Length: 266
Image 1: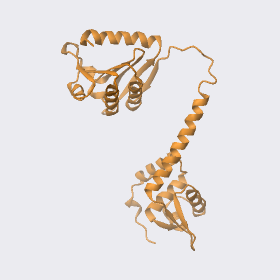
Image 2: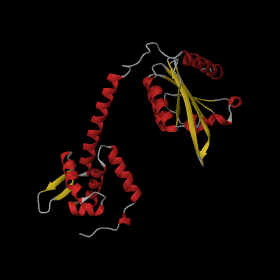
Image 3: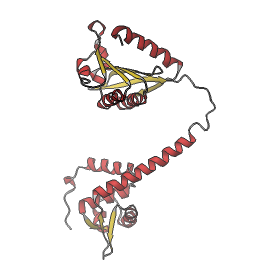
Image 4: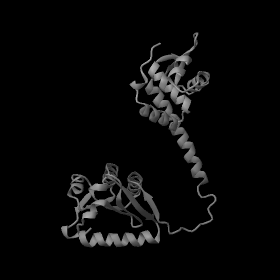
């Protein structure tokens, strides 16, 4: 059998694929063999060993594990030949396995949550989080958990479509949602939706408003974030603190609500 030159496939891309398959539950050898079968279609252990780092003696056991997981088929010929299942079938199987493992893990975490806690009274917790994606996930969760109202002030530098969709969905469901921004582009994004979008008056607008997120919800949850100095060319780290159902959060929410209410007649 003749093989394509190694340069025909990006090494970096393949390593990323191996790591991704490993994250989905495959061992390194299983990932390498499965990828090799995508290249070869139908193959023997010898052929697989020639284009992977898997020793030929390990290919047989690895193939058995993949067969048990329903990811390849075996032809009992001489020599034995292997063929990967259809990619759609493989994707579905790995997704089911991943979701099952995730469900089992989080069910366990729910059963042990707080079992060794020595504190029964609520603490004044203020949490610090870093990174745009992490902060966006927290903002989205706060918005989705709101029952009564949300006020969210932010600029285009920290705008995210996931948050925008969550705000619109909550407003559509009956939650009182207000967006405040110094950026007209942000305000215009909520036209023809149930979200009330207000532009800050010019006398209150500052250049650094574009780098800030202010979020309050239901009178007891607050999050503030800001983009910091550039750590790498063109990349700014976002940092936030947030608190919920604490005395600190309640007081700060009242101050922010009052500030927005006085200036924007909310």
